[in-house]
Length: 371
Image (cartoon, rainbow, N blue to C red):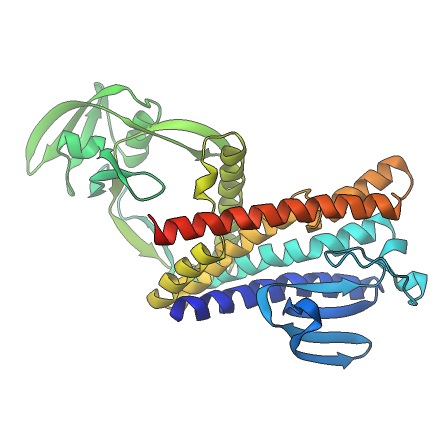
């Protein structure tokens, strides 16, 4: 029950913020908003609806999503009926820039939500940082796991016998004066045998080990680096309001690039499609986060908000990015696509999204009940 409540709560916030972006952007350029729904009112049924100032506001009974229906817009409903709204208030008669602004506003709101949540969490809790610049080990990871949490092997640090409190003094006959020296020496030698000298309980020890490897983002570039499986001793540093805001922006940017990297890895085959999660997987994680506290749940909402923003901006028909892509094509061609062409493109996109939804639901069922 906790997982279900946390999941619905998260979805409602994410959808409301996203659709609010479209709503405000449309109103800002004079486009009429015909409907604003949280949840889908499938088959015309709604838990609640109210007409105000020419817009129908409602709560649909199907919680996985929501929508804003704009006058003159061909959306997921594939409604091609003529509108009695004046042309100046219809989306299809707006300038390309206005269309792109409206279609991208939901994604912008998702990123802003993540920045706000990360900033508030950073301001309240501070940020972790190394308590000392000295190359003193604060923690040692014992095992290396895969993305499913299954054991692969022992870390290089564990094989070497390193433990918390040890101080690295030399790697491959090069003196180590601080943590940056040590990180650089290890990072530049993925899957290579290195000689390490360290101080443990006032005794100098020495040993050789092959470094572990990890492919990750460094300075927004994909790199394979070496690692031992150690980390520094951590302290918490309090942040000012401006520092927290900047940290929120940086965290959002970092998560976004990590997700882009994951998407690239998925497309290139480096990550199996079996690792994609759907509503059931998200509900399980949301439940675990809720049990850990509201802060953990909102942290998850921030991450999901970035994910939602990234997915929606992809040039897939049926998504915001698909609408933007069609608008750009029309700009290049210097003419509007025919209604039949738009309907065909939209149908292809919806078929793809439905297939993807079925796939991730299948993955969730297999993972939750058979793994």
